[in-house]
Length: 75
Image (cartoon, rainbow, N blue to C red):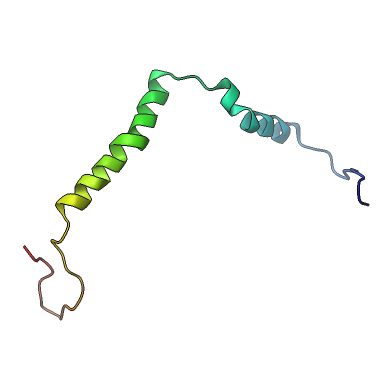
């Protein structure tokens, strides 16, 4: 058993091709306008938007210690 590589099932050629593409993706990557825009959106724009929203809404709502009928707005 140990050391023997007997495969009772045949490997699917499409899965082998996909695995090779997945492992070698970095070799074929090229910066294009599309990949630059997507990278900018996920690395800069989206975190900046979330940071801006967090900064502007900081302290405006207090969810702790409220009773029915009390407002959650603190400003």
